[in-house]
Amino acid sequence: MFKKLVRLNWQKIIFVSVVLTVVSRGPVLAEDNPLAQPLTLSETKRISADELKSHAQALQDLYTQQIESYKLAEKDYQLAKTQQTQLGTLSSVEATTQFARTAMIERADVLITYFNLLHDYLVMADGMEPGDKEKTSADIIEHIQAYQTHRLAVSNIEDRASLNLAADEFDQLFKVSTSLVYRVLYNLDLSQMNSYRLTAVDLYQQLQRKQADLPLSPAKLAQRDRAYLDIERVFAQLSTQIEFQQQLVADENKGGQGIYEQGATLLVETRTDLIRVLGYLQELASVI
Amino acid sequence: MPKDYLSQTQFSIEEPILDGQAKMPEEEKKVEPDQLDKQAALKKKRLYFILAAVGSGLIIVGIIVLFGMSLSSTPQITQAPSPTPTPVVVEPDLGLREQIDVLVDEVNQYEKPSRSLVFPSVEADIRVPEPR
Image (tube, rainbow over all chains, first blue to last red; front, side, top):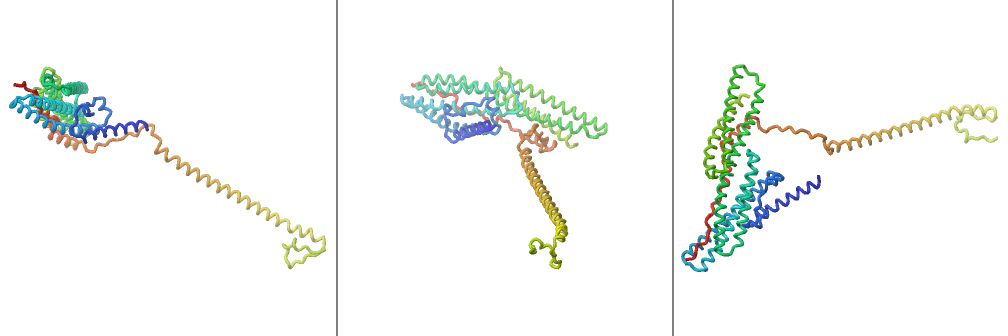
């Protein structure tokens, strides 16, 4: 027991010190940054919700620093590219190559941190099917690893031609990124709505239990039962809607952005129905 | 025969002690019940003393035992792990109606989690142009 406590405390100390070290430093390159490695689902089960939130916050801070640094690097690259077009000298080509290389590395860092942050949000999300969560987690981790490989390749490149080849590979990777990101974002929005629905169902069941022993006249009882039927009809409708949207997310043939746009409209409908059923619950609860 | 006053101090002065052997046994007979009383009183004293000592001893032992019991019983309550954990009755902080109201507020103020995770706008096309 004591050993376990000591071990837990050490784990916490190490975790906090790692997070603090990372946050206190300036823009950190992915290869020497412990936050560059995503927390796996099994790892996240071993840490508390507060630690997970701290991890996400540390990633958010790192992301802010990295995006600022990247924007400067991108600006330098754009200037060098313009100068190269204007001057056409060998030294301007060399300068563009170096600035492009730096910008590509920093871009990869930004994307790695972003996907890590996305993964943390996925882990923290309620109302998502466990199987779906595991699959999405695996997809994100695989994607992070692909960016890490790309980053390593770029950092080993010195010449212009190889850099442009790496840029071609990045194009393919980035297309997958866009699709994956929108798919995950929609899944997060949907799971949040599903979490509300599940809470509403739970509250409805509690309400039914509380009202079961109320001394009501037969007419009132019949009226209450009709209200229950109406509520259950809306809940069934909500369940069908969310099930359909979950299938939409799982459809591999559809692009992420399309799913996100279609899903956004569906989510509005689901939210309207949820507000309606909650209004019914409020009305019924006033009888208690 | 000289008078032995030392051994006869218990006699009153008014009563003359007559010389003569015939008197002596009578006198001795008078002394015996007093000595017996003294011995009995002494025995009683001893008995009372023993009883008091035993009694006070028992009281002290009793106090020690009670004190010891009270000392040993306190940690048993606080330190000994309960065989079955006491079920914690979690009373919801809010009533059912309040819980519904809170949920209504949350749904009304629903903000998509995706809004705080906007995909970074990065330059997708970083390339070095062909020298001309």
